[in-house]
Length: 376
Image (cartoon, rainbow, N blue to C red; front, side, top):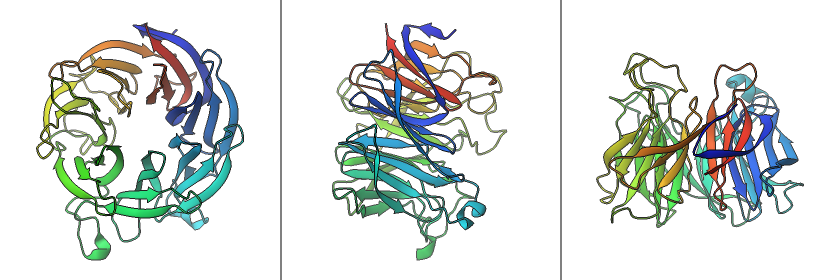
């Protein structure tokens, strides 16, 4: 039985493990973690009776775990897994753009291709896609803006990279491996809020998309061991001040022995003076701190469109957590939901969450299964 506090389970839907879920006009789009499953399209207009209406597959070696939909256009990522062997088979990463004006019959419009492993995560506002591709001449994923005014011909309009990434231009990274790379960017007004993995967080001025410029940056890794997964802007003032919800992901520690008694958590950052973002509070699920936990115990991903001071978050092995930031200096949990564990699994792995216009919350598990819930 699911564990519920302040939450009612509306329905569950059996499916392959998912990396992202988004809902548009009563249709849910699920990006899956592994081939052959690519994207599932599910009718949730009656949330008590979800119904699969279309499914897209991808070849082995392609990871298509992210999906965004606006104005009848669906974009999915293609990211190569399996290293050089997958690339030698002719696979290429990037984005695939579909017409989903009839969501039960998705039609391919175009395929935007790039070098390296492809695109990891992105956001889409109906015209511009803010993506994290690997591009020849750069070390790790960078920030790029694509214009999809003509979806048959996606066009780059701007890019930004952390100094040290442009190896083709003579720059040299000061870090090891791929620690500093763009995870993804979220736009609000004329700013991009960019998570840069172990490179921290970056705020970019995007008032001119062809000339993205840095406003500020911050990083706490080290001393904290985890990477930045999401910088989510709160789209309204709280007590006259501007805030960000910053999620660290509970994977890829800088060092396994760095803070072993901690698991990743949420930060509340005061960005009223955006040139000097200041962390003012943290939120962690009760009972996690103070003991060694396996990876994917702590935080993963909050909703990316914040609708109020109560925010749903996918918290890996602790399911769905709602926390309230009406007092940003003292965030507190208000409700939670832990779905049933998938048969054969030791624990849940809540990976992504979406809240629709009806207030319903959609939680996708990394291993398998969709839950639709509502606050009581």
